[in-house]
Length: 105
Image 1 (tube, rainbow, N blue to C red):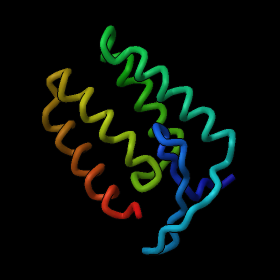
Image 2 (image 1 turned 180 degrees about the vertical axis):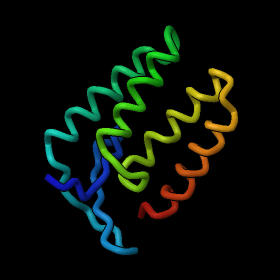
Image 3 (image 1 turned 45 degrees about the vertical axis):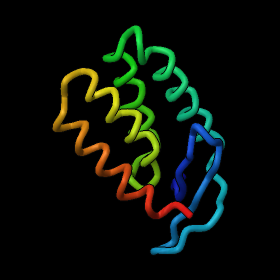
Image 4 (image 1 turned 30 degrees about the vertical axis):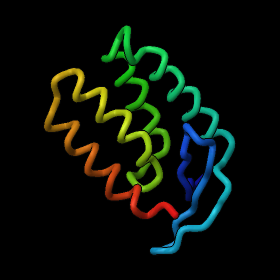
């Protein structure tokens, strides 16, 4: 039950990292569906209830596991944290996003 990839949830793509090499890969459907569901719920609440949206995006990141696998969600979470006044947390999320975004071909 090891999850070796990450979902570009908004784009529906999958990537696998093997050391420093990135290749197209398959994500286990149970993870992809759950993350997509949580991401959609976060988007639904991003204007009406940012705290609820943040909870959903945290769950999505937790569901996937590692920074490399969930980096696209960090950008979304950073924007939510920034809107809620957590500028330190937002900065950290934006840094994670930029760090791992550079690895995407």
